[in-house]
Image 1 (cartoon, rainbow, N blue to C red):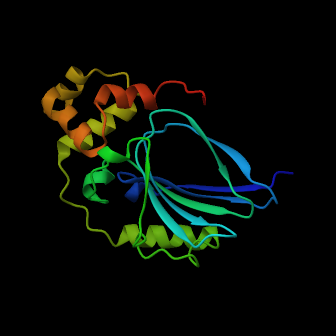
Image 2: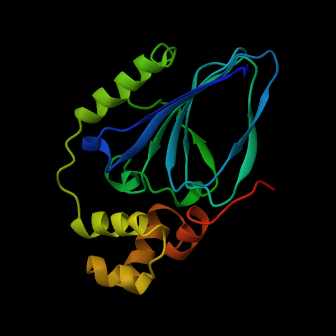
Length: 199
């Protein structure tokens, strides 16, 4: 029997432009447990509960390489996995400096509290309720088509083909990726859609 309890909930279709999933991992063991993190092209907001530290919230940028970390004894981590388009439209925060990095959100995120993360159903409900309150109508159709094509093709599309598909120049596309995510389109597809092994 494992001491790691994991919950995962894909996002309902009405929110799927912005959020891939919400999840929770809890270590009920008396020792820290190792965890392998693989690149998935997502931006994550994490909410931490540990036995010895205060409640924390952090923002994680795009990962381009596999890494190893751990969940402390008695710790619980809840997360929201955002698609890249959320950086501009929902988070409204360029993440170029958070490539393979993390930053603490000292003011929290979406008023999610430690109490909200004590139970996965409460956490899931809080996130989906907050998403339903957002007014996200004014989206640049070119950017939406760009990310849809990238993921539907599993990265098997050139920048030139992507530019033609979404009626945006290759230079503009790469400038957008570098500004908001901190890497080029080629680097993004190479890291997200290729096999990975932790070092």
